Length: 145
Image 1 (cartoon, rainbow, N blue to C red):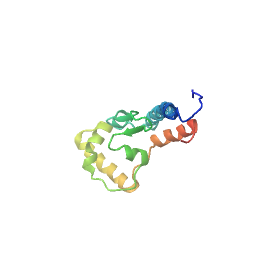
Image 2: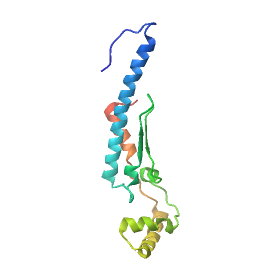
Image 3: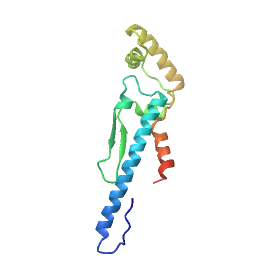
Image 4: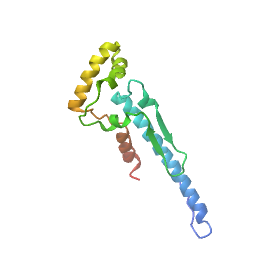
């Protein structure tokens, strides 16, 4: 809860420190909320990824006083969040993913990888946003900052 005090030239530094501490505490609360919501969205969207990297490879940085961040480190995080336009993808880059995702032999995975690559070339990858909805929910809950 905010402390009430009169500001004068003698206590400006102390007042600034108190305000920054309170703002930092509030930002920590908000960043925790966004992180929790984004993780719940990954579960809801079934966007774990075959390796689980999207869900488990995330950094929440609250070390700086008034700067906080959440970074999803999986190399495909942006593709999940924003989707893609149709684009060509060499099927062999999907071999391992298809093998793990569908429990296929290497030979069968290669065939399925070709089909998946063709679908991506025709339709792109549909977005499954997880972070933006969490941030929007935080704005609804805490107000715009």
